[in-house]
Length: 541
Image (cartoon, rainbow, N blue to C red; front, side, top):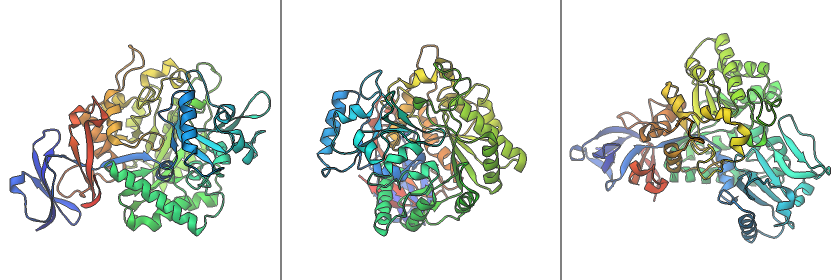
C-alpha cells in the first residue's frame, strides 16, 4: 500500500496516460494507470499534465511578500494612468500613511520622460510616497518623503549609489541603487527590514517581537503565493542574519523548499563577514537550506550603474561603477569557495560578467577545481570573448526570461539605447548559452517581475530580436521547462532528489490543466491546479 496515488494524469510532452505513486514523500512508482498500485489516498488528475514542481532560481521572498500589499505600477504607461492609480490606491490607506508602489517603468509617464518629485507631488503631496522602479535599482520619492528623510538638499551615499540632484540644488526625487533608496525606505511601514539584506546590512533598528511576527507572516504569505504558481523550490537572493533567524524559526513550517544565501560586500568588517560565512555553512533544517554566498558586482543599465566594457554610447568614458574591487572580489570568492560554499553574483553589464569570471578563475587557481556550480545572476550582456569562459570555468547561468526589454510588458526604451546597439547580439543570450552546454536555470527575480513561471516560459518562447540582423535567442518549450525544473534542481545541488519524474525523486509535483504546447500563443494556455511538496498538498485551486 503506497501513501498516495495520482491517477489519470498525462505525461509531457507525449500526452500519454500516466499514474504516479508516492511513499514517504518520494516517488515510488510511475507507469500506466491500469498497473497502478493500491494507495491510502488517491488524487484524480482528470487528464491534467503532471510535471515536477518548478524551481524558481532567483527571487526575493521577503520583498515579494511586502509587494503583495503595495501598488503595482507595471501596467502604467501614461501620466493620466499614473495619477488614477495613485489616487485610487491612496483611498485604501489611512490619512497620512506612506504610499508605497513598485514595478514602475522608467518611462511610465510617457516616452522620453523620467519621474521626479514634482510629477508625484502633482498627484499626491499630502502624504509621503515611495515608488520603486521595475528593476528595484532606483526609486522615486515625493517632496513629503524627501523632507521626512531629510534628503531635500541631498545626502552623501556610498559609491555606486546616488541621491540625484537638480540644477537648483534640490533633490529630483530619484534615488539610485540600494544605499540611496534605503534612506527613504527605512521610514516606510517595513522599516527597511525587507530590503537591507540587498545592500549587505541588517535592519536599521532591532526588530520588536511584533515586527518579527509580522515579518514571518509576510514570508509565509510570499511562499503561499509561490506554491499557488507551482513553485516547490526557491532560491532567495537576499539574505542577512535577520532573515536567517526568521527563516530558521519557520524552517519546519515552510510550505516549499527555500535556499537562503548570505549577502557579502567588500566594505563589511571581518567580524560581519565571518558571521555571514558561518551562517552560510549552517546545516539544512526542515525545508530550509543555506550553503550559498550572494554578492553584487554592479547595478543596471537604466541608471547607468551596470559595469560595462568600453563605456556607454553617450558616455564613452564611463564604464559604470564596479561594486567590488578586483582584489576584493578575488579574496571574497576564494574565501567562500575554500569554505565549500556556492557563490552567486549579480552581474548585468558585460564588464561585471567579466569581473565575476575573473574572480571565479582566481578562486579556482588558488583552491583547485571542484564541483562548485558557482553562478552568475542575470547576464543581461556579455562579450563574445567571455561566453566560452562560462563553460570553461563550470559556471552556471541564472537568467530571467521576463527581463529583456520588449518582454513581459517592458518597453524597449530607455534600456536598449543606454545599453548600445553593439551589445545587442549577445544581450540575454539564452540560446547561445544553452547551445554551448552551460547549465541554464530560470527564474523571475520577483517582485522585480511577475512570479508566474508559465508567463515566464511564454516570454522565453516568444522573445523577438530587437533588430532584423540580431540573433534569435528563443528556446524550445522542452529546453525552457528544463531550465525551470531539472536545471533549477541542479543549481541547488538537488538533481538526485528533484527536477524530474523518476522513482526515488522527492514528490515535488504539480498538475496543470490546459495545453502547454500553446504557451507560445498565450501565457494563459495552462494553469497550475495542484502543488505537492514531498507529497503533501501545499496548494489546490
